[in-house]
Length: 288
Image (cartoon, rainbow, N blue to C red; front, side, top):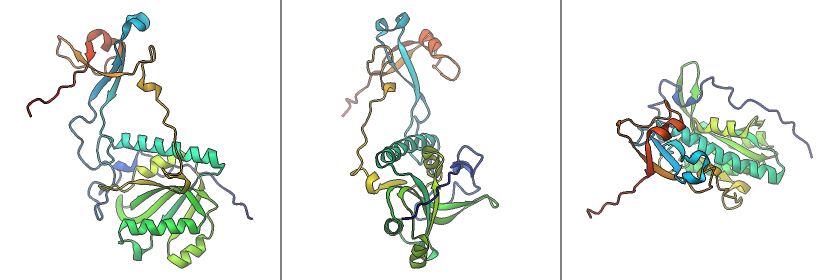
């Protein structure tokens, strides 16, 4: 049995910008068979608006003050021009947890693999290309991981995106027989080896993944699939009051001044003092 030497590489070294979503002269227009880049659709009315969670059990809190936690509303859609970044962060965090869990359980090392589609398969349905990729992953001894579909590549010289379907894989296995696979299928399988950070790699690849209605930008396979790997849903402390451990509830405010609370210009303590806070009333539609 031969052992392979792994080299680390910086997952975010390709671009100096925070995200590639805003790169490219044609990033808003490029589309192929319904596939496009993230963040290209208008935001919804509430996206980005400030709302507030809190706990009114002030007599159980220090200094008899309520607890207030501002948050911005989000639709978490990959398409949304405003919320795509939150989609990125949440999706990458969940995927990182799954990959790290399997990495710890299996004692294997996650590797970054790129599979490029040959020209004669480029215009086949994505479902057919994905099915072919699953078979190729078995051939190169990659048995588990996640797959992110990229319909486009970015040309730095022209500052343009162009159609060139390929798949990014964060997977586990020896990754061998790549030359044989190419000679047999025409698909190029490139093993980039051990990643520097799992989260950074997944976040970066999702930032310019393919987005299409009723399709997933990221899928799991093998022992990392939902059916084979159960992840314990740990209750987040952020959903509870840090003082009395009651669940936080959405609050609404009242002010004689007519001003709106803005966490960008006022501290939480100031917001507590300057506004009257109460549980948000959910209105029901009785007109029907």
